Length: 281
Image 1 (cartoon, rainbow, N blue to C red):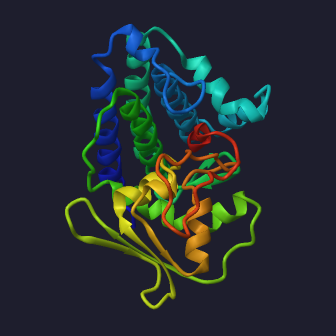
Image 2 (cartoon, one colour):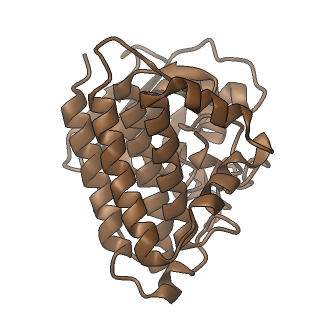
């Protein structure tokens, strides 16, 4: 069984790391454009604050959550409209995000054991919800860090994102309109502190190997595979690296490669919608 208090502690640590990046920014820093087209640093934080808000609503008032879904004027713009609705002057936005994430943690901790909360097209256990929030917070923090020219140290809590990336293998194929793979895939990742994280059967012919950080950057679509040190062995593993996404919803466009791919590599980004979809609830 997942350790919910430990997961909540990791979410708090991930949020605190991003908080430290933006807390001291001047107003013009919040207005800087990020790698997500049309989104500033403020949009990134507003998106997280909005998603925390609707997640808390789902955990505390299912009827109100469903009502908010049904009342959305344009479901295709749900993410963008949500971020826009939470934009505010930097100090107010920062306080709103801090209060909201604390309220979400309390709400998820109070969900009765065994109960799931509604979400967009599914229901999630509190542990799964927290894991998804860790993934999203980390991914959007990466956008902010890229904007500010900051390199963040890789932490052991990346394991949550790596595990989620592995679990969503089939979703990546389905989101891109491709048949679900029948061959199992083994994933072997070098963790930040030198140990190895493994997922999938040890005897699988298809394999993905490389740094855990690179795998997390790939499944959150924050880097193109051509810019990462991931090795795919076998056709299913190779195709997966083109469509992998740990987030729900329609496929994201990913990022354009910044380096020329090695012989046999794929340089072209998958032509889907922009990487803000990495934030899709």
